[in-house]
Image (cartoon, rainbow, N blue to C red):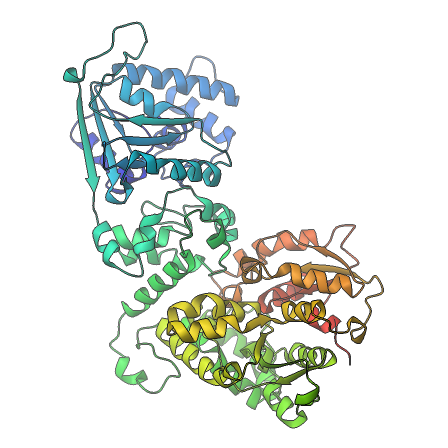
Length: 626
């Protein structure tokens, strides 16, 4: 049996079953051949052996095949594999392939490959077995074009891959060496094996259904900073790897398989725009995380029922419960500051946090302010009269801006007032971002409802909602679609803006630029937040700073590595720092080493503060009129 690359056949362990029955099975895809010889699992959806170097492959082939002349170069290794597998293909009785797509009208199989080996496996054998998941069915041959183009562009960066093969079996097939007459369809066998293995249940599952849209192009893995650093063996389950793997593993192998790597997805959302079929991969990962939480031992539910500030069962991991209830923790920390800050930084406290809750002692903890932003504003009051105001806004006090980094909230108030905006700071509570990151969906939904109730009066009055923290604005614009009634979500989304986006809009509509401080060509190195990039809001910050006279250079690093609570967790601290080093490298070049570092997101600010000697600031603070 000779096989072309097929993840579905790996999912159902075809090779193991065939070999156990006495069949001689060979993978003919070069990377899969390497892994078969090495007895390793794939680490990437498109490039299965990307984790192995040329030197490692040469050592493997020389030890396994013992060639007369040791193989060294890539050309020698490829030529050897070509000749070796060519003999296997000629001698094979059965050719097994996957199918990227199967058309329902004609039974045509579409195979998209880079090496052409799938075509050889079909043409050289008398029996062709195609294995495909039921989700690969499309109605008509005419429907293939967009999908074939998407795979090429998203998977390999090509307009079309090297080989696109369409088979409508059983049909005439040329003899492999090309010298003989056409083989008759009467002499050939064809078997199409459509696999369910949990897919029909996924189809009926509103939360997992989008997983079935996956065309296995690996765009999610290629855009994921964590995947790029740990690879698919760590960021993957029994068969699948990368961001979309959580949905696949939970659907076909069960939640336990997904649980092994699910927390490596930080919900940064950078994969969403890269996915050619627009699967909301972070949401799928969040839902699976929630199900994993709820599948844990709930024997202690009666002890926590009504005693914890969330909507979760007693089996939720204590670490997740801690980070998911950050708003409550911040309220307590602020109420007892500065004593709470001093106690939290002591050696015994840090040791206890690390042992019991997995909070890494190497990561500096947030320092809470005694006076929250909401309390500060209540004591201060607005400074622009309604009849003189250009606009009226409710500044949303996210947990960090309200209790930790209050200076950026105060700066936002003063900047907006300088542009003739009347500001209010309502006590709106946690957006739900913190619990959602821990898979605490019910708690996040409760938070979302409370936030909407707090902001609804401003929205109903025609006021705008301005948000300092990009991850919370992303909640309003993306996740609230799943957490709130449709009308409430639409109303809040349509009236909410990131603070620098809002300043840009004011200036574009006649606000006085001279009311803001001049930059005087101050050199700025700016890193935008991942959620901010997904919402395409980075350009507004750059435009405002440049209009004010700042000399701005931006990072092109996808992720700072902190990702909210992720960088605090002992099991991920080193990965978090490792990911962040790419940003450090960009901000310590000859062109950036002397620039003021600016970042929009709380996590980005914390990571840069930890890894650089320069203290970073939120961009709105550069415009502060104080």
